[in-house]
Image 1 (spheres, rainbow, N blue to C red):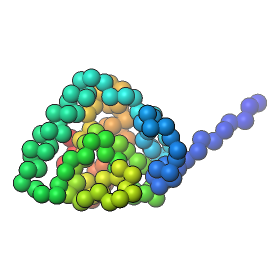
Image 2 (tube, rainbow, N blue to C red):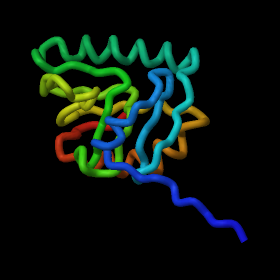
Image 3 (cartoon, helix red, strand yellow):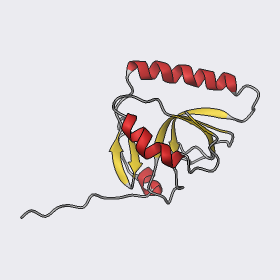
Image 4 (cartoon, rainbow, N blue to C red):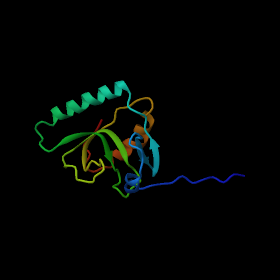
Length: 138
């Protein structure tokens, strides 16, 4: 009989302190590291267009900015969820040392693909809805 090894779990704060290679894109889901696939060509094009549209749409809202590949700590830094949204808009300026965390997002955008559809809809969407500041999820 072989012993099973328990996978390490992390809080968002611990996750941000991990010394992971820069080329690795990771999220934290239920305390576990989950690798993200690299952005494909169509995804990159749509992502760029949506960022441009967000900037135009926010022209009359000084201080509000879209952030690409935005870190969202659903339950705060002591929770066990750290998602990387394709785009998040916040009207709170980034703080030094935030490690990419978007404070009080008002809009979260996820660009769905065959490889992310299930995770984005079943795991991330319900939790994004719990963030008090969020007004829209696309």
